[in-house]
Length: 394
Image (tube, rainbow, N blue to C red):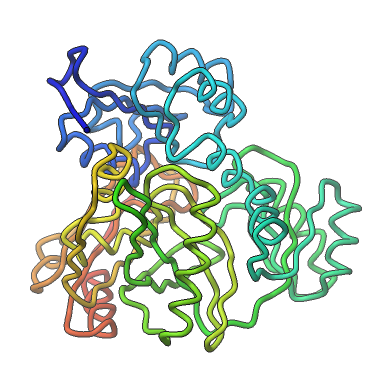
């Protein structure tokens, strides 16, 4: 039996978000719909989820002492990691003392580090993956590239949204690729994974929800990335029944191994009817923002229900939908979205502005959502809306 008492009382529930970006903001909103108090934690002030949370803290979540201190002070019912760079060893410790980490501290520890999740998937579960090697030093990296062969993909073991990722097309790019990996990791320089290039037709995110009523698979999401960073996504991605069955089998196995309740973003490469596991995130996925317009319950609403121990008996899919990230270049704390009346003049178009306090280099500041009779039309509609948008950086 799940009970939720009055907010801010001993019978109420409290959730602490480790990471307060645009995805965490939506999770906070959905938790608050159930009367849950939300504490937002991030490395910088004014993060999106802090705009809607009842309390917030600014700290480096790689600082184990600081993270443990704030969790003990707040004493939340749920600790919900929303980013990769976290002192996961402290979460394991705190979970052993009775704190409830979502989905589990083990899942957080394994998935925040590409080495942990890849070894689980390939070596323990026997799931199909690309060829891979890990390298800690430049010498190990160079040798790994030579063994894997070119082209190959290089990623820090701890990063997201394409940070630190590159493709080595030939040996002349090895030095630059190593430099990129050491500058772009969420936890600073360190170990990288070198992956053999996969020849695929398309890639998907299969959002998988583990909840008190079982495991539910959402319709597959196709997406387009630039340097590993999401730019567009659409739902549903057309695929054969055989490929979909294999994808669901892989997603079911990897999420069962990680355990706990919540939504998981399982990324896979598809070649014909063959499916290759890529990565998994134990939380809402950026490509899944399309579900804010495609379904009656978005991935964020599903995550909130699942982590609260509530069942998900049905998910109503409205129809073909698309999302397009609004990515802006510049260095400023003052920017302005312009022509929004034109952006939203066409039926079936929505927009979310994340409210991030600054731009450094390039940053995702919003998302345009669209629905239409077909995926192709939804993507075109999102593109038309995007073309009307101007972002002034002062």
